[in-house]
Image 1 (cartoon, one colour):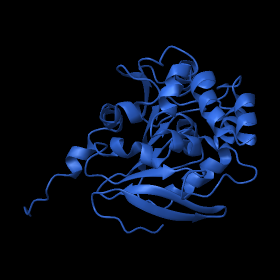
Image 2 (cartoon, one colour; image 1 turned 60 degrees about the horizontal axis):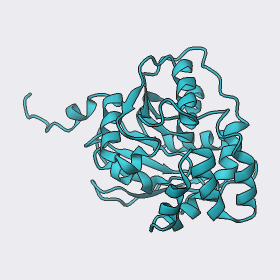
Image 3 (cartoon, helix red, strand yellow; image 1 turned 45 degrees about the horizontal axis):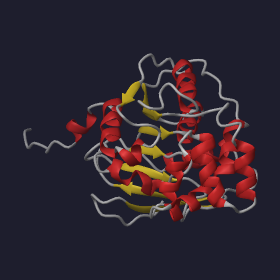
Image 4 (cartoon, one colour; image 1 turned 30 degrees about the horizontal axis):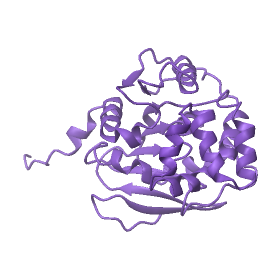
Length: 281
């Protein structure tokens, strides 16, 4: 992995894989690294405001999963295992166990990398998803992406998959964010297909300390509520942390609130690690 970033500001780092270059945003620090795996319709940059208050003083790595700017495109045969291999490559560049954070599709990837023996100290999942997820919207989305109609793809993701109103989509279409959303929509057909062709099962045993976070507005409604319940049952998490007045996009709409919830999940090591050393001997 190559880098050239300043001590406090996240900067791009790169990693070579068998299927092209992968990139991430990295912040330097001391102690247990925090690794963030984003979901569909997102990239590392979408988490930059969360990183501002995430685990102060500690190293943070936010992946740009393949299909995002500067990372390689989705390869032929892309599936969940592809993402797991990519994440394992990143984790191999870190010397100590990590605190792992997964959002949406990133949550599924995070759980699967632990199953494959990744050295993880704690896990925080923000509205993780798994099959069956958005199955009704999948054919529409695949058709739109295949036809190159990314405008339609963004609308399908927001309305048919996530349950937002068409008025919400029109507001997005008129905003400066729309061109970025069009770019992020390109890999969504393959990603949704990967999620729904992968069989998620409960681990035989689960010893990793795990926190699940859900937005108040999506906790008890499809499509995210049932997936949260699926993961909570599989990982034996009895209390889901609620992000007040938020839904699936807390990393954008309430980044510092989400960061605080994640910090609670990964524990208090931060305070200890940033203390100045003493000269007592």
